Image 1 (cartoon, rainbow, N blue to C red):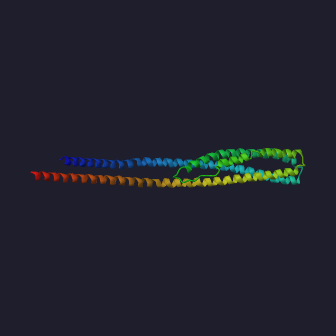
Image 2: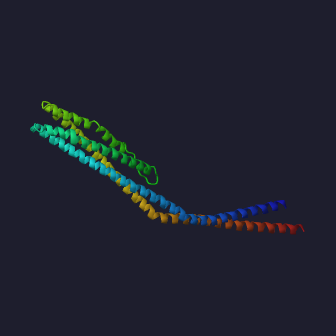
Image 3: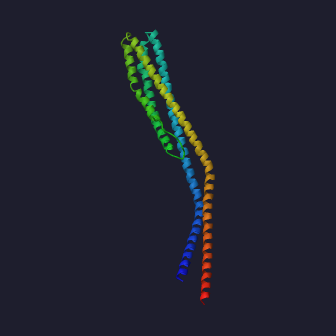
Length: 280
């Protein structure tokens, strides 16, 4: 008799657990479709936020690119002027006074303006570097940003390397004003300075190329985000259907457990009744 009661209690426990499983399945299906729009909207917000970050990054790249273009233009002007000046020194000694004013005045101020532009571009590039590092840290996007030298540091190095050039212009001006006997040394200094200016210009052109590559990376990431946003609705629908199917089959299996438990209890009851009849 105690054994029968124990089996009956075990059967009731199985039925109770199966009913809990059915309730869990129904709740799972309901919560899946209840939270689906919320999760989908949250993903859309994140995608839109990343897209806005990319747009702002592109705008920053445009600012840096324009600053570099202006700096390159200034350096090209300086380089052309130095070449012409070198030719002038070879042929015309009378132009030394005006050349001194040009070097110590306009060219020096132009170079100082170029340094200022590069420093400003370096600050803007620092924001771009930080943004790209943040994007690269998102595993889902698959971006790869690991430059040997960040763009902002590269621009600042170019600007810093120019710091002694204005003083060199003043020295050249002094050479011109003091004597014409230093024409040979003057020409050598101007040639060396022209070579340095050309190197700076090449560095800036390389930086401009890097910015173009950054822009391509940003465009590619924006395209990926756009594709993800277009396909996300279908993805969430499929995921919700899969979860619904899982919860549904879980509930069906619990109904089967209840049925088997009830059949088991009926067979036990029949067995007990037969035993009682035999004893009578």
